[in-house]
Length: 416
Ligand SMILES: [Zn+2]
Image: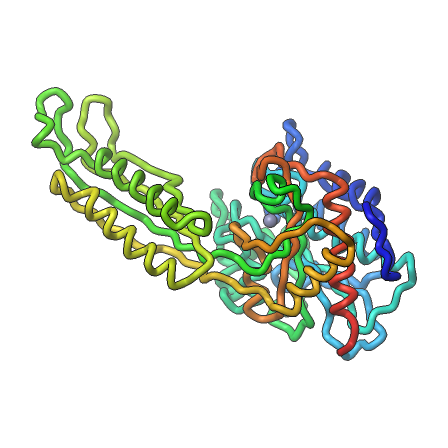
């Protein structure tokens, strides 16, 4: 990695990588990934390790009521709000080594670097492991940062259940991470998050740093198309109301719509079910989901109207009916200009190739941005693979991202 020539301490890329690999051994899967779902024994083990590392780096560790671990390094001026670095240690069931852990352990590496250098900042520095970012065991995703931002109540979060009916609150208690510190928004100076891109753009363009200016808005829909079941042998084509044929036309129409609004729009039909499927029955009812994303709320409204028209048109020829419902939405997020520029300036000062970008996936930062100034740094990941056991990020890219994070943190930790 390149040296920082402005007098800031240099992070130790090898130590950062070694800690990532040590963390990845917890919940390791046979294919090189991680299964460290929220509030499992593996999550507890990862938390215990992170906590011990933070304490060894001289930080004061506090656990809040949502199980978020907050490791705080005092500043020269204790009355000032902390500059916070946050991400998550939980993973998908067949997840990778880097999604989340890269950000939390970059924060740890910064605590260690500052501790080694006995470096004094004005503002305190705090590293946070956010509980249950992934949402695969306890839906919805980004649950604890959502509670912090006031999007969910603590009672709602505690009552979430996994597939076996175990409650989030009980599991949090079971692993010993139901803290007493309140999980409510505080006047933090800012929240910065380093994350792998989880997409192919940086790698394809040979860039090392993504300066993330915001995140896409997301809307989820449930769709049902109803036609008429009929015998596959005796129902003439012109009398059919085939729900799968109509659904296929709709899927194709949605793909065309997103391409019309490319590159910023994306539309996905990720699940599709035929009711009571049989090889010799004309499908009478099909249900599917739509995931629609765009960084602009007004455009999302327009895309939503166009979706309705596509569904209507897909059903019109053969006289089928449809119903659809928006079941969830997350508005587009614009990160804080001052935090974004601290990241951009750090990337420029260090000489790394960078570009601005919008996050496709949601992150804890999407919630923190509602209550504290927030920005994110992306580093490339191989072939854009994520939520995948083969997820991979190059050690030197992670080290570069961590150094950029350190520079941005130090700039923001100076008293105004
Ligand atoms: Zn993540």
